[in-house]
Length: 113
Image (cartoon, rainbow, N blue to C red; front, top):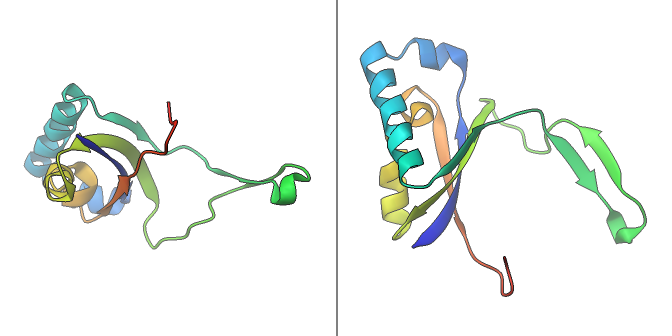
């Protein structure tokens, strides 16, 4: 099975205008993904890290990426291919509540643990 990193974007307004029935089904689907072994979490406050030329670590609070919608959470899921990964995330809260979910295939590096 391949691994995929997912990034969910969404806001409270989109969530609240989604029917309770759809939201409940989406949360139940997240529970299914967790039972399948997904590693999921709600996004906290990011920190940018730089160590240009290995000459010293510099940090800056805040995200490097910008988006119209805030990042709501992340997951690492396993799927047989990108099509299955898309199907799996298409029923999650961010996907159904007027947000968006990015799916990034994660290639394993040689020697990765």
